Image (cartoon, rainbow, N blue to C red; front, side, top):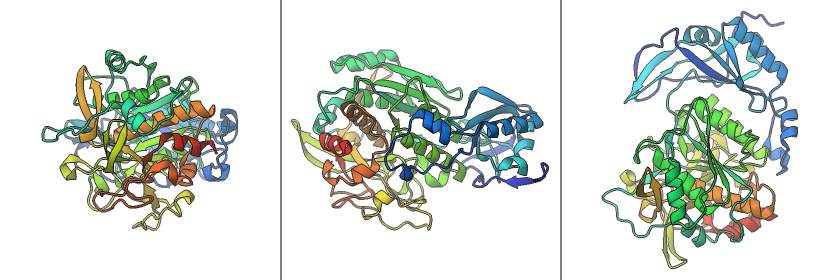
Length: 509
């Protein structure tokens, strides 16, 4: 029998001081905080072992959700440490039990010391070191999120700058036509989930934008996660990201419902938003689009694992997750080569960027999007945290610089250059935008069309897509810094941009 007083360090919970932030003192002891405790699964989930089989929600809950006994154990832990349980925000399916309490009680419960930091205009709390728990409870816990509230992600959107000249601009409808997306379907019966860590949208913009395309505006609903809300302000805020995501996904699949999950920009908010979307039995998204991320090195190991795990749950339930690969080339805005997460998760479809030129309804040129260090370039490279997945073994992914890494990023691509950008409407203002942020909702819209066409969810699509290289326009010209495009998969544009009907055929197999 383990001693309840002996404490053990929670694996992968190590936190370093936030970069580019100044410590400004201890977090007030009476401040109230919520933490999301991720509890182990009843049975370990390995997506590859399902071999493409989609599990029902009932089977998922029976095998892969949290055990009620583990939740009960955490309730006792909360009671012993002066914390309360937010039962409404807790979920066995999400394996998340939410504990609330003062900083003083949380510090004692988890063996940390919270400090406040300032970075620019942002103020947030955090800790250095590792989380610890009583030995009697530690075995059931995989992650404790919310003790560190540093911003973890940026939106991967690029506005056409004053010194750039647009050579051609597109509506989402025009891009879908150039990429030969399936016709005769409009996404009806499907829901596209969109994760947002800031910003908001105005319904009047949605109506005006789709009226201008001659389309019936899609049904858009917002879902609040951890207090996040639809809060539009100005066009140069994260509103641009929200508008781009909704207008591209909806422009491609106007018959689909769109559920936008708003959460705070923290690892807790990001992961809670994804698990909320994956296990949302009201809106039931069959595809989730994520246009936010940050370099792998900026994440804690606990955050990486928990978010990757949530994407693995999505795959098991038949939900495709599309993720922007970043807008800062092979460096991802850091020194050396870095890939962006969650695009580097092996359980998502990482989406890189191209520069798409056309004449009439034909593509005349498509190269890697790279406008230099100031203008942005598609993210891509090799993960140092996630191993080479089986479906990439023959893709020619360069060797990782770490023994643990190997996953190549991105998987696929699409138009992302602001000079060949998308016309969007944000806060009443017309804008021309690009960034790999546009590519994740573009692919999400395509998946919604395919799901309607197939009459079932495509689910985790990566193995099938890597087995069908002919379903893509192979991009062989350009670079993103350290990596160059070439025949077949590359660390700039993955397999290439889509031939939509061929992608649909590949996913029918």
